[in-house]
Structures are given as structure tokens and as C-alpha cells.
Length: 181
Image (cartoon, rainbow, N blue to C red; front, side, top):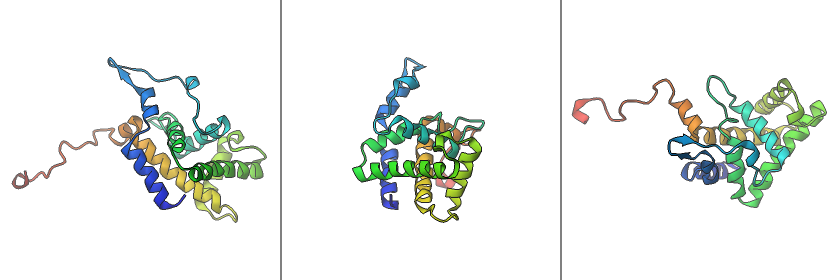
């Protein structure tokens, strides 16, 4: 995926949040109703690809004192966006997941989701650095996935609350000088 495609994908995230996922978080009469995980099935990805995606986004933005990308259902948003994407983008994304699995099998004799957290982190550190020969395709996919994960995460209610925790919202966005009011 090139930068232009990534920007288009990011624009689609900002312009039209995944309506199908937003419906899973509807607030009715002041009470939040979230569709249980067992009621949701990926529209494009298979179960293994979805589990791999969950593991990846959870390592990219893990839970700390606030919920991470897994709790923000970033995997569901990505799946929903991919459904509406051109076939070549769907294929490139799935090929990226396959590449990560293939690399994990090469290094640890098991797919990425079967690796320990230490092994998973080491794989992502290798992809992030890109210094090992032959990891170019994985590095490209990982950089793209980090960008999409952060864009989607901070577009969700959980991510928005993370950005604005601790009173980070200014009282006004206007100039504080009276002559500019």
C-alpha cells in the first residue's frame, strides 16, 4: 500500500467512521449496549487472520492505565474498512498478515498468535528496525499497520478519551488576548 492509498484509507476513517461498528456501541436511553464478541464475525478476514490482527494491534497500542487498541475494537474497524476497499488492497493486507505468520513460523516454528509475548515483541522489533535481510515486505506492512492502528484508535471513543484525559482539553480554542476576542 502506498502513501496515497494510506491517506485515502485514513480519510475514510476520519470522514465516515465504520457505521456497522458504531452500531455495536450504541447508547440507548443512557445505557451503553455493546455487542458481545461472540456475536461479531469478521466480514473479510478469517478467524486466524482476525486473531493475528488482534495480537498485532494489541502490541502496537497495548492497554496501560487506559484501554488499548484491542479494547477499542481496532481489528473490527480495520476489517470493516477493508470490506469496502479495492480487491488489491484487501489482498495486500492479507498478504501482510500471511508474511508475519510466515516469518514467525520461520523463526519460532509456529504462527504469530502461537508465539509467546516475548517472541511476538521481538518479531515486531525486527520489523520496526528493518535491519535483518529479507524483512522489507514485513517492515512495510508493519509500518502501514501502525499508522492505521493509531488513526483508528484515536478516532474511537476510547482513543479520544485517552487523548483528552487529565483535563487536556483547553477551556477555549480562541486567542486569550482581549484585543483578539
